[in-house]
Image (cartoon, rainbow over all chains, first blue to last red; front, side, top):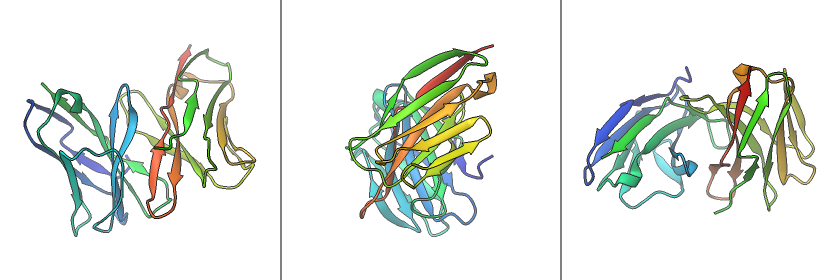
Length: 112
Length: 112
């Protein structure tokens, strides 16, 4: 158990819909990262927050947004969902930039 | 964007054989991290290498960072069925945008 929690574990929704994925980092960790994992693309970095502020952005679509709240939990919002958005979404946390990442169990999103 | 290249993509070995996965970059890396993801699981941090020529060992696992800091390797001696999984290297991009970019991973399967 990494100490990072993610909800929900599974999500099935239709194209065009909007979903919110939630992540709680390890106690004391200020950085939260979001990754998308699909079979053909591996682990794709989406976005990083540090203590509530966006720090780095990766290949995150405009339809996707995220935020980190004052209690340090984070949410990833995915809108206008497409079939290709079906993937495993991981949240990870770390004590600071450059530290090792602790991954949550992931949310498996299926768009039908 | 910059991404470390991992080879091989897949490796199947007989239990007891050795295994090596390589991570290569066209540019100098500030550091490299290695993660293992078991089937159905989430990535778990193994080690971080920072210094040129660094070698670190964890039981049957040996990690190396190249002298030029452009490549790294993970070697497993006498594989066991518990070693099954995907091994990822990840590079930390520095500058003003800190993000951890993962290679595509090497999937190791072990025949008992």
